[in-house]
Image (cartoon, rainbow, N blue to C red; front, side):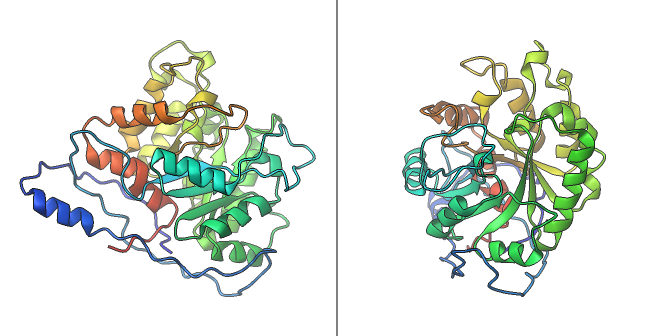
Length: 351
């Protein structure tokens, strides 16, 4: 697996003069072969070999200009969940959603034209990742990744290795979903613990915190030598501002600097959790500026399916809106929906 960071490219789209050449180029892209999976149904240790840390060339841009951009082939949904009531919820689960299985997820993704997915551990299961890991085994690491939750003080490196073998590539620090007050110094301590735990595996530390707290973490993140991914556009507090200038939102300037400096990725996801308006126009300045700053290198699209606590929501208008914001820039569409995700989740493409 690739274990590198993404890069910022200045590549510009060009206008095609040879339709046949373009067709041959597009047809040359092959899906990665199915990878052999290690059976770890009980998620116990199956190996003691540490993955080799290598530096490889980031996923290349596809230089295309589209008259009407669509979701590209081999796109990734970088944040979604599976929920199955056969698996016990954590005792302190803040909500208890309906069942949305891995097969439901596959039907949903096929309906919006996305093949590859990143399974994220929902807060309702706590540190019991069994439901998600069973789904990951079903999908296979050739088309799926997973982000687990664990206690860094009690989880062994051998356990992380076992998870790594089946496609886990990150850990999630989720402050927002629990509804509990957490002090900034505790968040900093957890960030350092998670970074130390996953650094040997080149995993991602995925963070879901209120945007205002990003300012306090800005000096820390660049020093920890891991890839950070900020959930849901950084969770801006749109109730605190009526301005169209995202830099007036507490914490946004820090997020922008981290993004420009190559220290974080940002997920373009869950607009309905952030906006006060049905058409989400109050979120648009934030989303557009994030795309402007890092759309071709460090911003990844995600559906947040099954939209827990918003079940039944139609995410397709959000997909259409994101594509519309890209104009006719086929490179930008390809990076948002495919290339940046491959860089973030250490996906090797065979071309």
